[in-house]
Length: 182
Length: 159
Image (cartoon, rainbow over all chains, first blue to last red; front, top):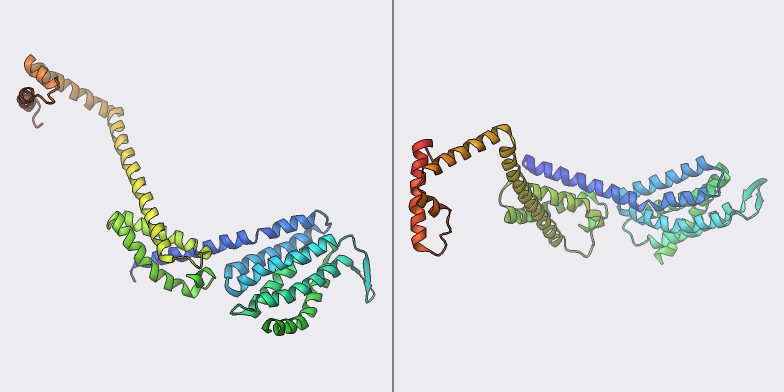
């Protein structure tokens, strides 16, 4: 392989990676808009921005990598809109006392929506060559997008959401795999 | 290409090796084996791979590569045409506008006036007249031109 061939190959490869990065950034653009929407009624600006940054970075990274992660991220963004909306719309809900702790109603609604969407993700990603990777990436993006709205109640809200989803996801994962296989 | 669009980097070399000869062939056919053809290949390949991620899975990659390369080759050809026209105009402008150019221009005009001053009235009329469609006038003009050249050679050397 001569030098010009090598440089052409390197230029093409660089263009391909740059193209993927640009595409990933474009696909992750809804995340900052969702963060802005969440910030309109949030006093936890730093936490909301941090969680949104994690969601954005995850979305870009998964889309850039592509394959199962890219497919999962795309579905995660779509399914993440439900827990996000549930959390934003559920902000007027009263607090609940669970195990001696006050829990915001909106966080519970958001967590419930996340669990439901986890099941849906297991279903929609089942046809991919690597369903588990797609499902995990999708769940991660969905939870971080939901957490962007839950961050308005502080670190506790995000922790309850993430913990709830992780615990609930274990049986949901098993159920989802069986349901997906059906 | 579908795998590459999906992010499978392992299929990059396969797609590159399949597409590069087609792109080279089209660029070579349109621009010859020149540096411009190499430029067209480079531009077409970088554009093709930059957009590989948004490639339509039902699309024809060869047809896409051909149309991209043809477009790049046409763009380069148009750009070269504009550049050469611009540089020719600039050359003329530089020649006329620079002090050396103006001096040379004035010198040439003086020399021409001097030589034309030596030409007979009949020859001058034949040289400045329109000979289109008139064989006799055309012959007279050819003879007057030959005499003018001889005079120029006599005073200023090579024509």
